[in-house]
Every structure is written in C-alpha cells, then in structure tokens.
Image (cartoon, rainbow, N blue to C red; front, side, top):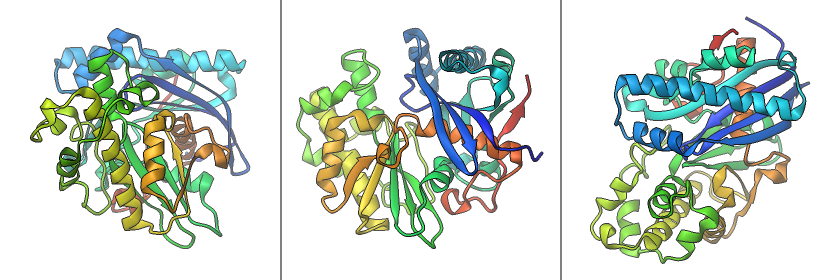
Length: 367
C-alpha cells in the first residue's frame, strides 16, 4: 500500500496514567505536521478503576475482553467528539491512528498488550483505523518502545543544533536528536506513575494536581538512594519499562518506605524522577543546552522545578517553545504513524528500540 500521507489524520492515545483519551487531529502537508484540533476525554471513574485493576494482573479473560470493547467505544467517542467540535466530517480524515491503552509491557517476553478494539473504532467513526503499533517491532527483536522518537525526529530534528525531548508521562522517556548521529532514545524511569497512584490512594484524584501532595512533603534521602540503586537505571539503551516495574509495591519494598507519610513518599518519588533524568542526560548528552518537555508532567510545578535544579546548565522548557502543544504530542505521533503505515514506510527506529531491522508498524482496520 502506498497511499498519500497528505491530508488529515487523527491520533488517539491513553498513557500510563490511565485517566483518559487524548485525541489530536493533524494536517500533514509538504512534510509538515500541523495540529488542527485536540481534546482529552476523561474516563468515567468506574472505567478508570477497572483499568487500574486490570493493569495489576487481576481480572478474568472475559473481563479483559469486555474491557477491550468498552475502551474501543470510549476511543471512538473521543474521536467523534473531536471531529464534531472541530466541524470536520469523518470522510475528510484519511485515517485514525490508535495507540490504545497499555495494560502490560514485557519486552523481555517479546510482548506488549494494548487494548481498545480498533475494529470498533473504525466502525463507530467510519474511518480507516491503524492500531497495534508495537507488535512488529517486538517481532523484529526490539523493545516495542519508545515509538515517539521517530516522530520527534520528523518534527524537531535540526541540522545545526542538538535537541533533547523529554516525555513526562507515567514513565519518562528521553530522545536525543544530534546532527549527523543516529537518534538515541530510551525510557528513563518513573515520572508521574508513582505520584498518580499515591494521589488515587490519598484523595481519589487521578494524579497529583499541581504537585500539591509532593509539595507538602520532604524527600527521604535514604529511600531515594535505595531506589536509585535499582539495577534498571544503569542499564544501557535500548530499554523500556512501565508500571509493571515502577510501582508503589516496588517503592514500599524498601526499608522504611511504609512508615513514611504519603506526602514524603510523593516528594521522594518526584526527586527520583528528576534524578533519573539528570543521570540520563549527563551520561548520554553532557552539556545539552536545551531540554524540551512534553506530557502531563509539564503541569507539575514541583517536578519541573526539580528538573531545572538538577540540570543547572540546561534550559528546561516545554515543546511549546518549538510550536508543538506538549499535551498532545503523543496523540499527534500516532496520527503521523498512521500515515506512515498507509504509505508502507517503517515506523520504528532500530537505533532506539534495538530491533534487527526497520519495520512497518500497525494493523489496518477498515470501516
């Protein structure tokens, strides 16, 4: 298949915070990618709780199947709401690219599970839908993640200056774009996933709004040191991870963690996130002048403040400085990847994922 990648594409994703669906409508034209419209559709509280339960490995096959259907309908509703709000007809959109909702990421086992039935999305929107983006890279021996760096390269690479892009989702991942060198990108460690869980435990909120919980606490130095000693952090790229490793059970398995107030735990987890990023930058891009951040973590002032403190020689700002909304960069990525799939072009970067070869990513579902 070698369809044109000019025109409108719609991207859908829900991240490890599991709080809702980000939808982005983009226009591809002469090699550029423009955000036309975007929105976030929050999950109903019952659905959000069910997702958290399913991601912890609890639930039957029947429950997982029903959840796949419910998520497909939810993703389709988010797409239709975005189009209605933008006044764009479905037949004007070439394709939807849906990442889905990750429940489990196990690259060491060569699988990664995303749900949100794409056939239902195609039927409910009337738009060709591309999904299941990770499987081909995994089959080629890669990690299946991160996938956004190929999009970062397409929209942010500059021939004259090095740039670093940091996604602050549930997990943080870093992309290094250096002129004349292969793209280097990898997961860094937990960003919001630990404080998200603490917020759900303490207030019922899906995340630590404005970093209020972390701001009320103090980092616990011995616990921070113990967490940073985990062997995952010094592992060289390629590497990817998720809440399967970095969760509160992991934190609370360390001595003294269970005795700390939730605010101190949150402050320690923020310090961990910042320290892991600082180590990744210092090890792989010493002297990096600018770091462009995206993802939900850009709205956590405590996290952003700590990043600036631990990277004193680096200007830390958001991708808005490059003209891209930091809240919808990943949704834009999957809209773009849908276009690459229809054109039959590879969507992975072997230098990033460790795959043996470039791979065309995604399965196509027609309405």
